[in-house]
Length: 419
Image 1 (tube, rainbow, N blue to C red):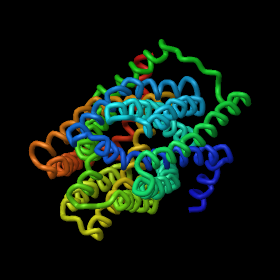
Image 2 (image 1 turned 45 degrees about the vertical axis):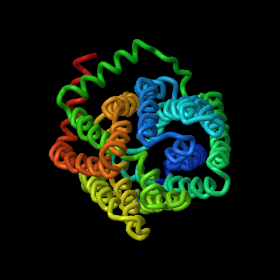
Image 3 (image 1 turned 180 degrees about the vertical axis):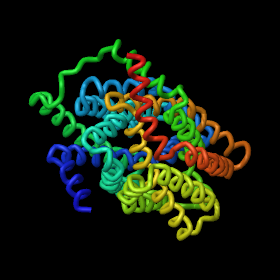
Image 4 (image 1 turned 90 degrees about the vertical axis):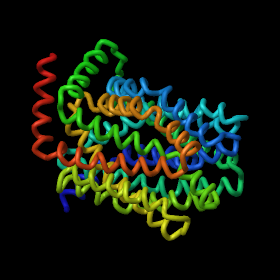
């Protein structure tokens, strides 16, 4: 345990602490907005089907950039890429409070998605770069636990302010958080470049072509990366069928206020924060498949319970289970990718995986809206749970410790063959 504590403290350099603080501010802004966005669209006059169409279109625009986001971070440096992503995200954050109709909100969600495409794979690769393989699951869990404050404070603050200041007032407050985060990120990037802590990298398209060829070889050669695409694609599609409709279901069918909806997301954040470090420990101690199977199994059970009625104690239990499932799944998945992907391709691997999953899941929000409007509001959630259960045996069979070790050696051999 002492050795684990020491490794965590070594990771928390002053630069990393400031970096995390900026990430917390930016993600508080994001978590204030995201649980309320479907309700905001309804307030702007969108139907449930149009809400689904909105998120489908919003997913389509940044798909290719998700691949480029990982490559850009590998080429330009992590802090510089995050600063660029923040400036793009700032456009959407400042635009969203002033849109005249739900269609115009697409500009904001596309900017946010492009920003995420640059920042998300960069942040994960940055953590992998600064941790040892033996402790990587714990460190991912620790970082997720620190960011738990985002999921605790953001949704509740968003719902609370939306009830008292209107949706537009809440969005203006969120934009203020994001402005501060962007200033910190840009200044950190400028200082890092001035101190030569990051290379003056350039975008080399021939290198991108080579790296993509290497990653595609790994993803299509029947390796563990191939199976990761399969099971994570299934779970991503299933989640996107219903994710944007939880707030609408809670408000329209269960009669919850906006503040109460935010409170449930906060309960999920508290549970995730409490168990994230334990989730990382389980991944490192027993293997990634335990976290993956346990997390998705809990999600499936909680989705079924969600349909059990409006009683707040039941819904508090459900959303606590969502948080626990997230705490088990996320550290294990991040640790698995960082082990399977070659070191120099980690940013690209996270980006390519996000793009492939995004293409597969692209129609899911719209299909969920169609199911709601034409069949029953239950159906997006029921199919979500069924698809999650289908992934469990796939993960258990394919993600074995021996297989991970074999894949690390195999990945090295495949890359040498293409060199």
